[in-house]
Amino acid sequence: MKPLIDSNFLLFNETAQQLYHNTAKHMPIIDYHNHLVPEEIAEDKTFENISKVWLSGDHYKWRAMRANAISEEYITGDKSDYEKFLAWAETVPKMIGNPLYHWTHMELKRYFDIDTLLNEETAPMIWEDVNRQLNTPEMSARSLLKQKNVEFVGTTDDPTDSLETHAALQKEDFGVQVSPSFRPDKALQLENNDFNVWLKKLEQAADVSIEHYDDFLTVLEKRVAYFDKHGCRSSDHGINVMFYESASFEEVCDVFEKRLQDRELTQKEIDKFKTYTLMSLGEMYADKEWVMQLHMGPLRNNNTRMFNKLGPDSGFDSIGDRELAVPLGHFLDALEQKEKLPKTVLYSLNQKDYYVLASMAGNFQNDEIPGKIQFGTAWWFNDQIEGMEHQMSVLANVGLISNFIGMLTDSRSFLSFPRHEYFRRILCNLLGKWVEEGKAPNDMKLLDQYVQDICYNNAKRYFNL
Figure 1 (cartoon, rainbow, N blue to C red):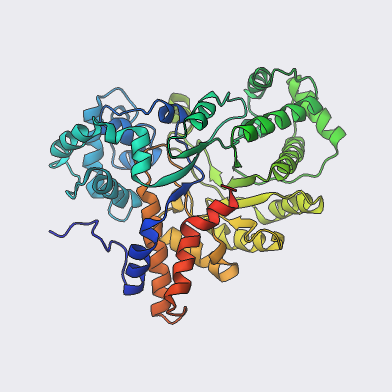
Figure 2: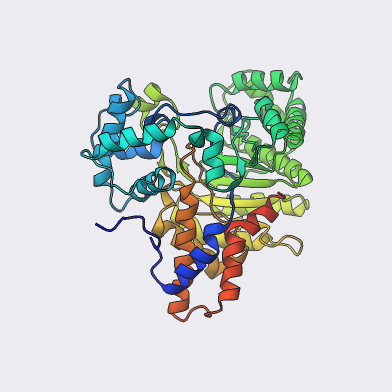
């Protein structure tokens, strides 16, 4: 039987094949947003078995297993790693059409040279083969990165993080640049019950007492400077529902004081705090020439019972649906009026917002940075063939796909980097399809430059690497 992942996988025309094999395949990887654990890179962690590196923490796989009626004890529970792997192997054959089916077999092929399809019958053999290979220096955390020609990794880090691990990694220079990304979601989540608890951690990290709102902004600025010193190139914000509520500094000071006193806040007060604080952060990012990433549109923690049992990021999030264009436009415009709008990447989990974001990005471009405001790559539920093609088509229709900064993994797994190959194959096939349909010229020099830029050059320039 022909292998699923052959050399021309997803490349359905000659132009696509030439673009991928001659160019895209060889470009280094800049993974500017992921959730890898820097400590595991620093210690050059090796993995006891495939479940440890493949299933632990991967809520994409967890959701698929739940949809297959796999008991939670085989997903996040106390069953053995082998039993969990067998439960995953039982699920895989039922996932044709889901990108996980492709990713699973790409990862088996690219890291372990296994062409066999994973199912209940092949699982024991694949378990033994993969685990034998994992127990070698060639499969340590750093080796897995270098195998896939990864040049840059942007992790996700809370403002309270010490960044000691990042400092140690930067001194070593092992061939992959690992940089922190500033993720201050908890600084904006005034309504959360643990906001004041997190505030104490922030005080300890900065060694500054926070008694008033101006203290809070001072500490955030101090942490931004600290992250910048440790090689940070971007911030990242998870925003369930976009907000904009104009407010004076004095108003926000009053809201902050009420929260410190555990007094009840209105939604309007909360939005005033979030707007003023995020704008203040945006100005700080502009001063540091950072990129501001806004991930908008998830509806998180829908299953209360499972949230109480497992906590956040466990696979119970879905696509949200709230008004976006008006508050986002006001927010970007307010920073632009101050000439403090940083480079910004706009992502939405909801595909209905794609034209909103692509057109919004065009409102705030400038003559110094090509693609200063980016309509970001297909994300989370959308990083599959149709989602990626749709995102790139919308971008091309409304803006300039030639300035697109390309793909990211948004992953917690060291085996996830073939997703860049997946994206690159889809990109090359899309360009080749446009040539076949007479929508683009059969100019290989021009198309080759598009591929180089989207896969690598644009991101390297955009993030000042």
